[in-house]
Length: 536
Picture 1: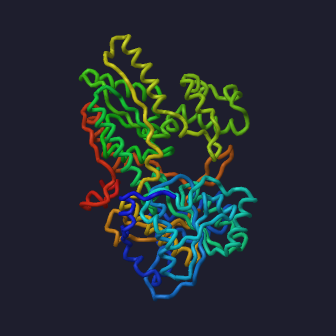
Picture 2: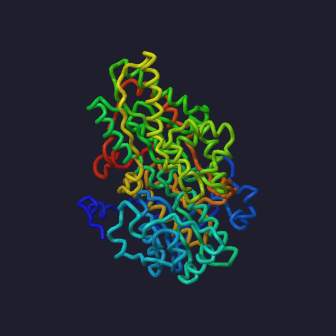
Picture 3: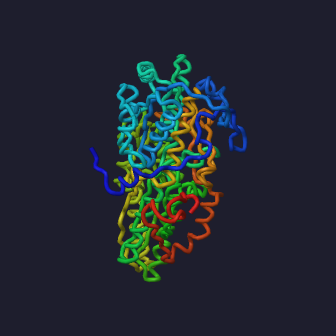
């Protein structure tokens, strides 16, 4: 049993604020709402057969104050699905507290170790005693998490058996885009089976790519960005002190560069790659290497043989020739072995493959991820770029175009930010999300993901609602086949955050304008403790 530190004990006392709308749950009635999207969201025509029930539901719902009424007791199961994100325990405590407010006879189960707990009916009864040491704490260790996908007919049937055995009124899926896609499919299956159990989702991912006009941010993003910013700031201080290393820092975030961008804005390293910009400009691996070397050479002329280059985890998927190579590998490796791949690649993809270092080649051919795709997170892009830069600088040195000293240190910031103690923002946001999930179950709503809006304002003024998950879907290649998945949200290159970065990045390159934001602050002035990263 983990022991609590002094700070953890102090955080147990923290009471998250709630939006004013959630102060009296018994008075809230569900009503059709208006999505914040420019056009009313609908389910894609090609997915309406898959989601025959969900596609007919309101695209967005909200709650309005009405006459108070006591809700019937509910039995609910909650599951953590996928990677950890700070604030998950507050989703559960918020859900539990809300269920108790609606009816003290309600029961909450936690499915153990992720979705496989649903399949195996492995649960923990969640009550005041079991939750006592987990309020405002990091990690998912109360019930654990996992990446099991409920996708085969046998698995759907097993989930139904569990739902009926526990007499569940609802299952709450706390997860990212793939997990909430699974939630929608399970909701649709239960409806087709006339099973009373509703399935609702909670937007969780540190990557920040599960968002839209209705979901302003996924929980955990704020805490992760602040944690990584602290670490980058520390490394920058070390670089400026020693003045002898270039630090190549890979940041977690496979499909979007949100974490990289936000952490960079808080720390101001010398160079930052944004995958979405690379894709738009169709920059090649060679061009990116040249950009890095150009900066290193210019700094060397100033006597600076040190600095930092920050790289998003999924950057290689944005490089055109790499994207082509990965797409072909994802398709080929579903049917042929790794040693047969080179014979099947197109000439352009093969050319890209051949110029890569041996380590990167091996990593591209490693085992698939749970979705059958190349394990991009296992590819050490920070080392790839170090090797490419070393090679180019050696050539420039021979040509008398570089006379500096290049020594590099690779870093990967990943797991360090997933299970940290949630910031005050994430603690309050997650507590509110938990309350919204209770309202969805109480009102028999299925296939929705909960939303809390107005996050840039005071907590008391936050608005609540839920988005039909089916309206967020697109089609994506998985295991060599087109499958429905929630559309990922990438960095908006015309947005305020990226444009701010564009205006200042040249100054960052040559000047040592490093900032060290320090650790997450829980106590002190509100500008330090309450503001989320996207407002800083």
